[in-house]
Amino acid sequence: MELPNNKELHRIVATCIIHKDSKFLITRRALNKKAWPGFWTVPGGGMTVDDYAGEKANEHGVWYNALEKTLRRELKEEVGLEVGKIDYLLDMTFIRPDKTPVVTLSFYAPFKSGEVTLNPESIDHAWIGSDEVQNYELIDGIDEEIKMVDSRLNNNKK
Image (cartoon, rainbow, N blue to C red; front, side):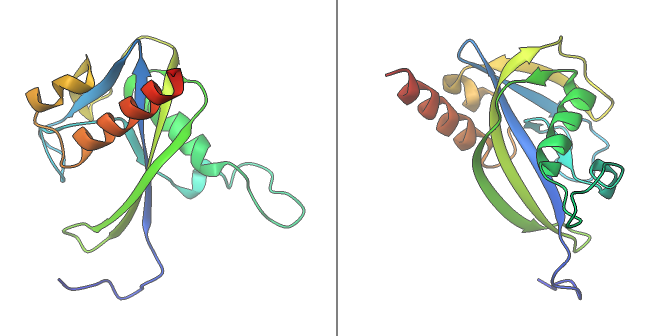
């Protein structure tokens, strides 16, 4: 695989496994998407400079919580929902077919408010239990992430 010329630039993406009453929200990607059209996934999206540059930086020129702000914006835009406390799950990297390296940070959070309202990036949604992941054509790894979150939530109940 050919690597990009600038080895320090990456697209940063945040995803969130939203949970409510032992169910997890998945969405089906639109058929015109460049990557994984028609596959089921969890909501999220890419960080842009606009997610923080319009805000006031601290005296050292630093913006805090920019990724969380990005994730909350993406969840509102993609599925119309607000979530509670966001917890880190894992990270992954890959190189897209257009040679853009991507760092994806996966999080999980409890549903807080809203009604699922999809934007044009998705064509369907479902609230599923971790025992139902095999019934959906999920992007590779999403099934394991949902099971990981389910396990963490169940361990926290004990």
